[in-house]
Image (cartoon, rainbow, N blue to C red; front, side, top):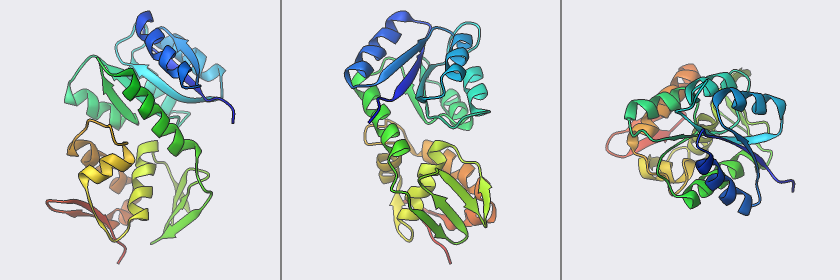
Amino acid sequence: MDKLKILVVDDEQRMRKLVKDFLTKNDYIVLEAGDGEEALDVFFSDKDIALVILDIMMPKLDGWEVCREIRKFSKVPIIMLTAKGDEKDELLGFELGVDEYISKPFSPKVLVARVGAILRRTNVFDGDVVEVGGIEIDQSAHEVRIDGKPVELSFKEFELLTFFVSNRGLALQRDKILDNVWDYDYFGDARTIDTHVKKLRSKLGDKGKYIKTVWGVGYKFEVQ
């Protein structure tokens, strides 16, 4: 299997080197950028980038602007790095289609684990097409269609829907959803799930009613 390319974007050279060293040891190819403009130049000049690790506070273009531009053309998984601990920043990241959100300082080993988990889910599918209640999930193509019409979902929304459908009829606790969709070492809380569920319901239109809230527990996907 070919090595996967990861773009690391951070204006701090020491931070880029730290992340690059750990990723390289885990057999990834690492591309670097020191500001937002360079990040976009590198990203759009190389079509094989499998994941982007993106800092927020950068010169020229900040991480939000870079993320917005990438999302116009690509669903590539994005991990945001930030020194801030503001909940508003985290929610904005998810609104823009960020897949993971890690606050500095962080453990490089945890970052590598999250990268691995995202890439496994992105690149390893069994090719099955699942249809339930008018929702069709094509895992190999990473596409969702509602009554035959394509629906644009972010990476995390796709993973969340796939997990719900795979466990339809079961009441799923928020902790279990975090463990399976955001990986075991995600230090998040219920707001992360609730934000994604709200957006997913909206994108599914009248099929969003299949995702039912189970008060005091979490959610259940159920087609009646």
